[in-house]
Image 1 (cartoon, rainbow, N blue to C red):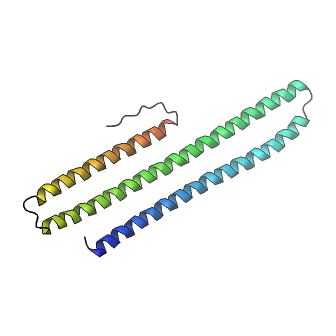
Image 2: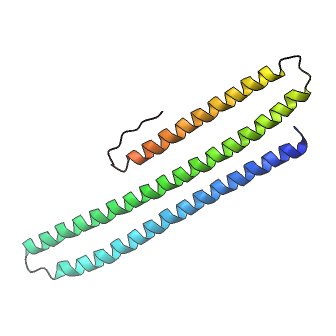
Image 3: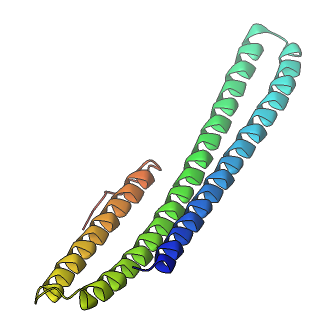
Length: 169
């Protein structure tokens, strides 16, 4: 492998790391915006609810209002948590896709470089055997990663309560 090839591989890895960092920051920003919006809405509702409670005519009306307000707040919190889970699942899917693409590209480059190295190395007769073994190992590793990514995505999506079972091929 030449110095230029190594430098190019490092550059691609740094680019991928920067993309992953950017994705993480964007996801964090979306989640924080959701949290701020939820907190603001809950505060506004609590002020409105407090005013409504002061206008209650009797203890039963006040209790009914308190129950209604608690249910509405719980629903809003559950909706916010559901949305955060969706954002996280979307980010996880993007991460898995990008990581898979990065691994596929890197393994292809490594295979090409290894093949070149084996063709000029002068190893007696074993160059093609070593290459075939290395190629099989990379294929197995890629298949394993694909299975892990599928299982991770399926497990993450199970939290949505859709009742689907996880099947890993």
